[in-house]
Image 1 (tube, one colour):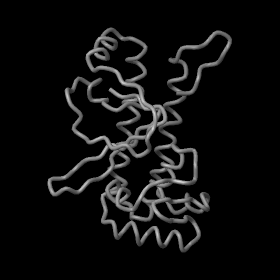
Image 2 (cartoon, helix red, strand yellow; image 1 turned 30 degrees about the vertical axis):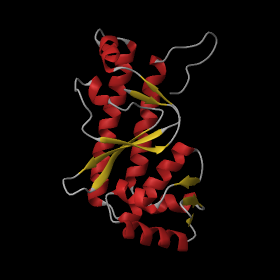
Image 3 (cartoon, one colour; image 1 turned 45 degrees about the vertical axis):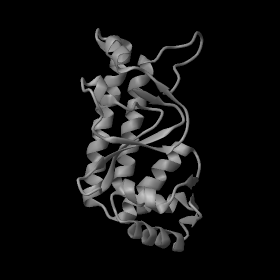
Image 4 (tube, one colour; image 1 turned 180 degrees about the vertical axis):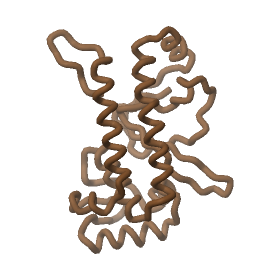
Length: 203
């Protein structure tokens, strides 16, 4: 089990023909290996680091012992799992019903939120693998967004120039997923330990 700190992980599904698609993004709000918490032995999806950074590691056996008797950790993981399943469902629907521009805009905005920066280090090939589309589709769409003055792309670096307008180009999935995590943060706050004289810290 991995608990990201500053790292951001993409969970992707791989088809028999090698095609891939992102089904969920995990940052400091979540865990990699939620299936272990649910009783599984392995993770069927592939975890790909999108942004390097710190993470905490916990042996699966230790986690199973900790959550066996209704511990606070179990309650935290239940809340997170419920949210992550909703996010996965929305991500799958997004890949089926929204166009490349909407999905690319969502991806860029999501990564920007995690990075706390408008400058992102990623190339078209890796983005295409996450979106489950051809690289040329990402290149053409990114070119259109750049031509409209929304982003700038140069040597593997994408900079969001006009976030407000980019948000108008994305689909409703971006707002839906943000609301899910906002609700999760509210649900987790009472479950987190408090320091003496200090309010509970946001996960």
